[in-house]
Length: 389
Ligand code: FAD
Image (tube, rainbow, N blue to C red; front, side, top):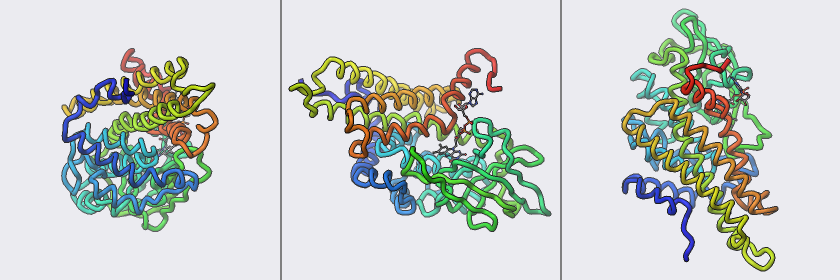
């Protein structure tokens, strides 16, 4: 019998419309042609040409692709998820670039910004001519952003921002930062052009995960902004949390891309690798691993597509996004690690994508709400008891 692709076994393509499949296939071709030949070198060097890639991603309509107007593609949520999946099959760093640009920085302005802020930034960000970042996390406050110390104080009509943000994707290459700060009226968001005096973004180096992604500290040293820099419609922590729900949705699909790339590698390698005079794929233990990985990939895909439909209908809740993020990232990292065992020593180099994906997924497990935080969200939904503190 000819081999069947793991997802073909589940028949998940039948659940995707022709139009969404066409978008998916375009992104897959871009990743195959543009990213795969280069990604191992970028990863090893710890760099990624964000400035070059952003206009290419913009041309494909992938930046803020599920947003309407202002030069955005305005696709449905499922198509956006499928694009994230294909991008992350290339590398989680590439998907992170697109998630942060579209779901965090652009979404914050699109959802909570003034008309003037939208006109100024969104068309250029959709085209990839302007890069955005999203500064919520601080050195001492990750899972508990309510404790943030960055402050915005009034000086006449102006705002003055002081504080430090940490682990900010795209920080050093950004033209604009959406920065969240404490004010007398609670947490508010600010649109900060990165050439404003007092703003700097030193890059974080020596990472062992997401090496093909720019991660930075943001230092705000008396950054003076006009009154119009505040996002008028984001009041309190619900503002940044609404953006995180958008980005987490992309991760539900995206993480499966890394998992799929690993499983395809495992099947290919096991078919070629001869051990004790027959292919590794012909051993029962290997087949048990492949079968179990296929189950998790397929179940994850069914969950992602289901949640995509709920989002398209407008009924998706943030608790449901937690279900998807927790499950799919956890299973993706398990698949990446299991694949590594099938590749033996060959699995530890950049010759194959698997340890790169596994290492990347360590970050994906942590950002956009750690696994533990999503367990607590689900625990609260089930019991009515908040156990965060
Ligand atoms: P901590 O909050 O210190 O957590 C440490 C451990 O404690 C975790 O296991 C956590 O689950 C656990 N924990 C926390 N609370 C509880 C609890 N109540 N009960 C039990 N256990 C608990 N942030 C941004 O704002 N913008 C970005 O663009 C961005 N990009 C990132 C890129 C990368 C590569 C990485 C690694 C992070 C990025 N982050 C970004 C930050 C990310 O969102 C935080 O790292 C994350 O929220 C976790 O915060 P922390 O690292 O401070 O961990």
